[in-house]
Length: 177
Image 1: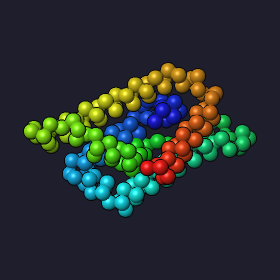
Image 2: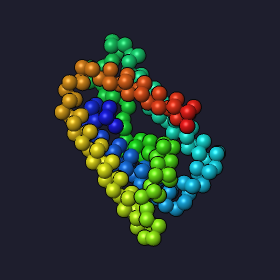
Image 3: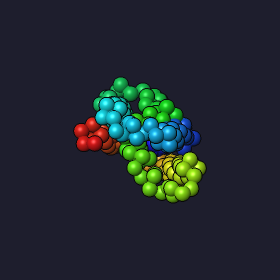
Image 4: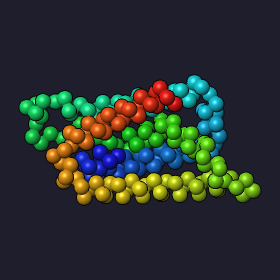
């Protein structure tokens, strides 16, 4: 998300941020409906989510690294970046991130008082989490707007760091979780 904010600015990063929030809300609904417990207890379902998420994050990492291997003479002066973080990218990143599923299933219930309404509390906690997440992403994106000029000449470094980080996360997801 930060790479998108540095490259495209806050306005064009909003769809990605909204996709992340939508995906997190979807995972919350899955948790509320009890499906997440089934997914976590089904080795096949959890492994499927883990591998889909890991491969997708790895794919995004490779896409971020590709510009580093293009020669300068093949680059067009006003060429638009090929990678675009969209609403759907945010949804996929949230839904297929096994850590989001584990977070909502394992941590969210610890904040619920059993004597009160389960659905209302879960909805309230989810809304608070989504608002906080969106606010943090909004602040990060806005701050990226202030430092983007500094990174304009260093975007290959940013792309490289982003790509390597995503690939490391993918490897960790695929082999350590």
